[in-house]
Length: 260
Image 1 (tube, rainbow, N blue to C red):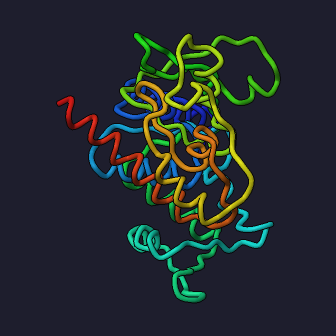
Image 2 (image 1 turned 180 degrees about the vertical axis):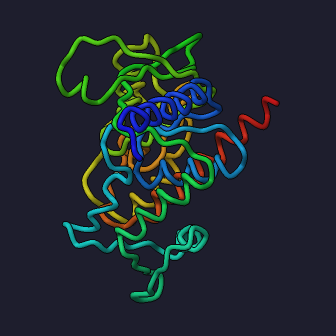
């Protein structure tokens, strides 16, 4: 016989057990798109304590919709191996171009990252950061519903050794730092440069090149890289996003390893 209060208690107890377990992290990922999922997958597989905070109900960012709501995506040769690793089937369209079903791809990335040990908190927004000595040391979080309703409700905090901003075009964490911290970003003018128009070839290369530390303790991943450092957007080719997430995880893991 099912008891409604037992069901409620199970959800509350398990959720807060999970939240309490992730108050102190090796890495916090903000944004649940493909680059963030790959970064979380790689870091979790390596044994680090890593959690993701996504403001929306769904995880996966813009990958669900493919191109203009036609649910297919394209990856190039260099990134196909990542989809092979997480067991997403691809089909060659012509030499160097591979397609994948966007729904299968996105759901598989979510599943594989969670199975690897990434803890995902959806419907949670990052509204601020904690900074000590010109370095981000944690996140300030609140329910997305509080933000949407414009309620004055004080947030809670997460401590993290490193943060990955994978919030896509919005570059949300970088904008918070630029707006609220009395210090410059590691960009040419110390500010968020903003993204440029669509140029897939250049954008794909720059997405990986711009995957780097953009402020003390904060790395960019995915489209956030180009929005922060001022490069182009790429449209529905996702190889650079996957490669960027992988690189962000490598950079963070190197720092964590060096600190042991």
